[in-house]
Image 1 (spheres, rainbow, N blue to C red):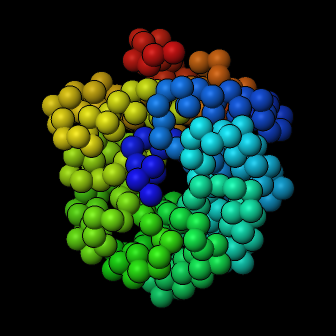
Image 2: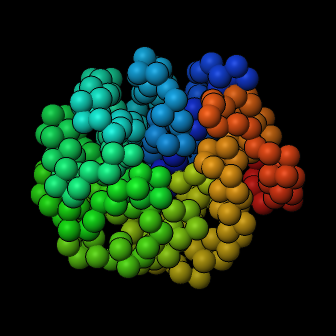
Image 3: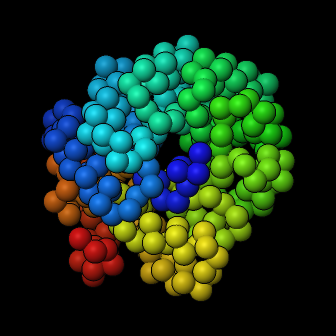
Length: 295
């Protein structure tokens, strides 16, 4: 699944001020990423506010993305939850809608042991085979940590093809590579460390920053993946303040405000998340108006 390498965007879900889905804005974002060189769209994930999407809305977002992309760019649907039954239902539904792959987050809140994680991911992957499945490890949000040894067991399931590793731990990525081999996709889930992650052999990044600067993130990935360390690090240094700004408050609060400021989406975001604070807006506006981003 090398088409799932490079710059994959963790796409926001555009919403009106009252929180209603804005599918026309979603279409426009998809067109922008297709033109900008983004490698794939990850829809209905954490950045897409999946925890506050109803099941019908979740399916609608995935369906619309597949239909509007029309084969121009791969669509990866986030279908993970802390319930194996719910994950199975969303995964089967998304598979039927024609997505190119699924991304399954580590079950959150209920703190399963490693054997529970293994059984959860294996059962879901086997239910949607041969559709490719990406694991998603983000212990800062889920509390549970999918350990490299468990990833190696899961890599033996034929359609589990890679992992989004969001710990920012480069040694962890090396350990997974050594256990799983070169054919297993390693995707960073941490924008600040993704350049070094790719220079050390990672295959790409599922990026929040790419929502705002898709061309630059695509370029960064291209430079890093051909081993142009000087070029990649120089571009990454220019993007570093923006990486930081994307997390001055809980994701996706800053990135949705930035896109609204740029005129690309309406200002809607759903409780319990709230719009970016006044202090955050002041900080982020300085970067946007300094033309760190190319609109």
